[in-house]
Image 1 (cartoon, rainbow, N blue to C red):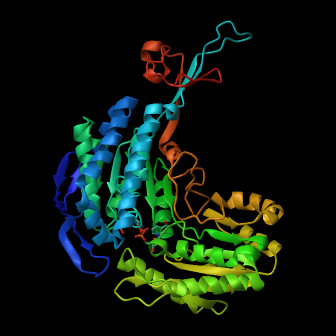
Image 2: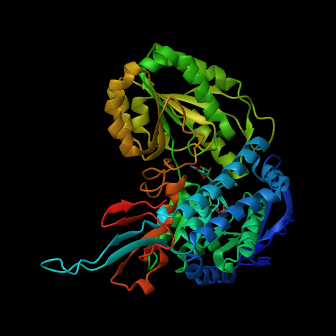
Image 3: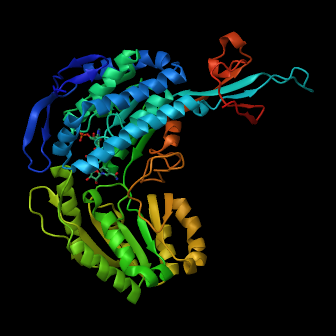
Length: 527
Ligand code: NAP
């Protein structure tokens, strides 16, 4: 499939006239053809108008039709073949195996949401039948279903050019909820974005969806991204990226005449807690696994283990020694963009020169441009508490080990942490009593607790939460990964005393969609 540099506005493919976006080879810094045209505000307006017109038609498509649409997107992405992987490798610097896996995840997410749509439980149909005889007052007939919130703006993530970009988790869950999507391509991978965008655009045509169901825009500055969040026809946004970017968009959304939610996934340092018995019994093994998780994908995962907490002593010394030995042999890896590489180098330099931080180990020296060398630092609980900057995410393969004077001090540090996506607990049975004391504080601060593992490798399923209190996400009541992600783009509507002929199919007496429904509070399962 040829990459043209064009915007995809509904079924149109047009070259944007508002400046240029140049794709860059992540490994060499060289620009790659073609040039991408930035969208004008008129392009943005047209995409929003089409999405708004599409909304009422698209959201009433039957579960079967919408599920088939999602499956068609998945198949169209696969049909691009190796061109997609090759382009994405060049633009992101990520290796083939990782991107083939990520494509599998992207396609799997779309198919999972197709199943969710077919199953119909997301509609959450409820019927409280009328009780005309009820005393002292008769009861009205009340019925409830969930509908899509409206057109959704999706900001592609630099670190997941497939699974969290144009047809990634945010797009799949919004489309599943019945919401048209306008994707704002990440400027780090515009060619990948266009290829995937064309797969979605073709699926819209193949399945006879209204053309405004999907558009893809490139932004040569910030006006289009910000204009999307400000446009009154956009009713929610999904974002993965920096804390600065996420909070800027949240502020714009909150300042609108009609404020809207921005589901921003931003920064998290994902504490790893080493409990005493586990540390005594397995310091070296945990250290090796920790370093493998830390350097995975050059550390450019939102769930990267950026903080290790443990009680100071000889067992922690063993852990630090083993982790340092493992990290020293890790190769420097190409990072996603020169900007991200520069930000990483700057943050590592600041950590290394911090008065209360010692460098335990650095990975092997970079052999090319834009490669990040892994880093491991050590500090004290006191210094960590005093210096807020030590709590900030370093996006890359860098982690900080904190020597805590006691378990109580470790628990106190947990209480001082900002919201996190994950917390990983390394424990043996002898630690259970201590772990119980930590659980309430950890639950308050994190979206996912896990035992004897690391947060990297996020399973896409029904019980996954990839979210957490601010600043890990903008809204800790939701998840961006897994089937529950659909809830972000739904809202309930109640129908009182509507005649059957005027009710949506989901709520009609005959149950033509064959949905499981809650009748008078009791779940009636028909499938
Ligand atoms: P980013 O700078 O926040 O950009 C993400 C997306 O939002 C891009 O499409 C960007 O547009 C857009 N954007 C950013 N700020 C905006 C603003 N003020 N107004 C309108 N649009 C805005 O993130 P990034 O480029 O992926 O990486 C930069 C840093 O973000 C990294 O160094 C890292 O610290 C952090 N990051 C964290 C995670 C995580 O999961 N925790 C993931 C990725 C990145 P452009 O495409 O035009 O730049």
